[in-house]
Amino acid sequence: MDATDRKILSELQSDGRLTLTELAERVELSLSPCHRRVRALEDAGVISAYRAQVDPTKVGLNFAAIVFVTLREGSREMVEAFENAVGGVSQVVQAERLFGDPDYILHILTRDLAEFQALYDERLSALPSVLRLTSTLVMKNVVPRRPASMIGNH
Image 1 (tube, rainbow, N blue to C red):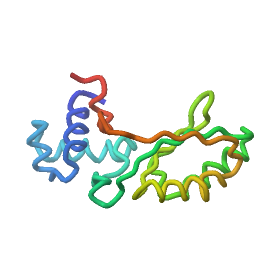
Image 2 (cartoon, rainbow, N blue to C red):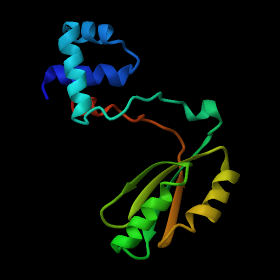
Image 3 (cartoon, helix red, strand yellow):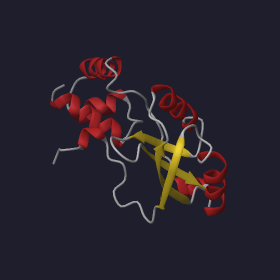
């Protein structure tokens, strides 16, 4: 991956709706080489999807929480069962496995506190092998998720 590929990624992460012609102009390539590079990035899995970024509050998701999960057992079967089950909880918008304790961090969006409480009591606490849940509420998003190609670039 060279500087031109990084420019392509940066432009697409800023505006995924760019036409190939617009993208080629922005990265100073002709259309065919730009198209080849984009296809190569897609084929290599560097570009894995194109999505719309939605403001959660504009669709009624006004409550954000982070839940830390510690599993009772770390066997392969229990980890797999937990990960499969948490993948089915639509309010979990991101889940990451961690080294050490806790085992997982879950990013959750709901309409309000009451919906979060019901989710916590009825679904999260019932996930396979859960020993402990610890939650904290998000006050404000200070640094939104950055495009990966921009990390370390100035």
